[in-house]
Length: 446
Image (cartoon, rainbow, N blue to C red; front, top):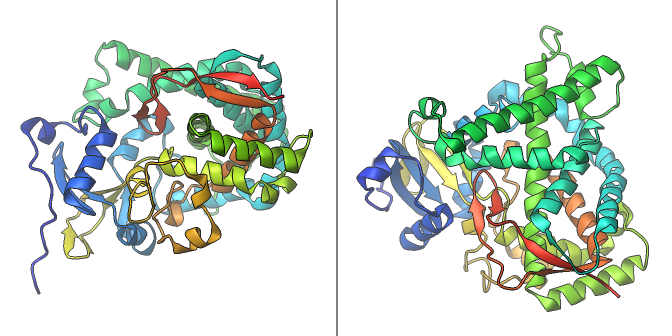
């Protein structure tokens, strides 16, 4: 048998070999690797053998065809410090059990009932805005999506806690790359300001979630939502129910992932629209024609095709889940290469979705590209903002509906414009945030 080919890649410096941080700007680092070395790049970081994969066919095989040969990679292994053993971080039979348990909350019929709440909360937010006001739209979208996920999945009014949750989540996010360092368990206990903020932030988030659990247990009512399902679910083997820690892990995962990613997608959508007058004009024309002066409903979504294209294109350029990783359980062969056991295989929607082989003028914001013919021509996994395979985002349908309805609700009344010369830069943490927020002026539409 012929020996496996050696994948190309850079020679790591001594610092790279010791720490797990891909340069000052991870987006620049990974993009540069792909452009320099191609679809498969091999390098070492903090003692780990890592492969950066940018070929859609290889990505499909890793996430779908051969998914049983992989577990979550180092990033999500360390994210357990925040999320516990929830749906995003759990593995094997336990993960499958939990996913089956939560799936009914995300069935199409159940999601349809959430649409009215999404529009109600967006309408309430836009009513509070004032013509000509300058707002941090990143903060506004986080407050909005937090309220939506709190009400729809936990039947809790958490809008009043949005600032607290936002500050706590930022504190946790800031420590992400530190958590990936060797000896992170020791480093995390050091009396450094950023690490103290992260510990305090996790405690604040825990307090919010445990308070929701305690209130629900005390009420004894079944609200028919995700939280009630988690509290009453019985194990198929022993008939036991989840304890508060298990409920906390699942609730924390959905609570944070369910609003953070959507808020980021909305923030980048408003930014890109503010840079494209033609796209905005077409957006307003469609919304006015379909809705007139009323609010949207889920029945309007099929007629809001341009809104959906705008959101699709925004998530192509700025996918909230910008990096997906898997760790090989056993030796894994792909193409002429072989990844050894425990190697980490990284795939980046941010890189693949800006590849000129699949997208003409890939850096341009062009919602018009998303025709039916274009979609059909794309290779599978040339567009994968929600991942793929058995671990594909459970809330994908929820997110799509929320994005379209919120954009339509707000754009029917407001035109959002970036403050002149405002610094815009993506911040690649667990999700792809706007590093400086997104200061925009809201102008009432005539």
